[in-house]
Image (cartoon, rainbow, N blue to C red; front, side, top):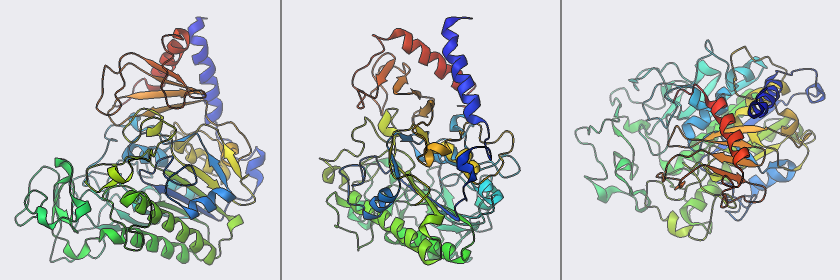
Length: 514
């Protein structure tokens, strides 16, 4: 046997074992499954953005969750931007295995496979007997392209495992700025049809940041050309839109609107098993917090929307109890879609207010980045009486929720689905300190990958400079146990380990679609 292949063979054996679908033989599967599961996904929330993890804004509800649950310190999204990380979370598959999974425009076609193609987290939970809902930010596409926003849209979340959906079609900074409920724009007046385009074509009478800057809110001014499109509610967006006036959201009400929709869904389940995939728009740009949060943090408008995010979490925790879901029957998973960014397309004062705040601390990088801060995210699991409280350093990926929750709920994963998801239910419940052995993370400017293998982090040679990471020349190898900020490149001193991880990364990503 060629010696340099030995680590690959060992890793292959390990991965085959981890991907095996254990459903009823292990002790953790003998316990009763939760009656309610809340997966709360924040947006652009950094590791150090809450008081629970560090020095960020005071977040009493996140803290309450951590006090009664398990706080993970080495949990990751698969990508440092939202569309691909959300794709991986719902499909249990690396986004780079499928073309078209980069950051999507607001009128993109659905990129998640429908139930006839593959299982998703939603279909698995339906199969386990849960009533399911997707509420809040979506950004995974709708329909089959060239969307007609004035008619029912299909395929939609209903086709990938969600009984009910109340979503933002894409992001807060992209048109159309409307809610889509169960595949139809909510509140649309048929006499005022919506038109949307991302081709730079302005509509007659359309107001943009370039033509009507006087109509912008002080914190809604764009800092780049991309965000200088249609002005809606005093904020310019990416893309162009006309019509749909009665259906447009008010940015200061988004958190309340989606949280209220989630509260209604919880109440409608009347104690029956429920799975809620709730995606807040906070703390993504544009940041326009409700008046009751404005100026209440010590971190400017970015800190204020962090308080708003925490309020939504608290409301949903209370709604579950009020609807008869006792804490010991309720599993809550709190995390973020990717690492943090301070200023991202708007001159909202966040850069000045956060001058002394590093939202990724102690990690390097943030949103868009290949360094740890791009994908290492807050991750808290609470299930009183079932999850052991404390802290865990297990290497975890959001992509593993598919197989882990399927194992917890004793449901079978169809062959060919959840290809990269691993069952780490023991670690999720605090019964084991061990999670993944390897994890590939991806940066915005793809195809660019990094490999975590235990405490080691390997980054290939991607050239002298990149727009986001400033990676420098040559391969990089870091020992995160002693160098969390990725400051001391060990590749020149450890050529054998570097070669081993290079071969392993190439083996895992062979045949990537993009």
